[in-house]
Length: 125
Image (cartoon, one colour):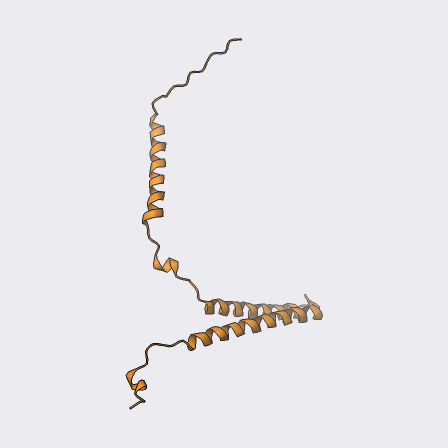
């Protein structure tokens, strides 16, 4: 049984092959330019929300959950024991968040605001 031998040789690329090759080259070039030459914006590097904003949002979420829990308890979805357990848990979490808010606001108010003025260093003359 004699099978014909397959001879592989290079054919010149067709027009479609050139288009695909050009698209791949353009995409590769765009990736290299984007990675190495485009600088990040300062607003991209800055945190979008501060610690205080996150804590305030968490506090509001807990208050919403407490209000919803109270509504669902009055609608009869929870037993009194379950209601009290969940309410206590949410109240403790709210107290912790409020404590953290107080700590953050105290640390912000205790920060020095800048150099003292000449009048305050001379005794207010």
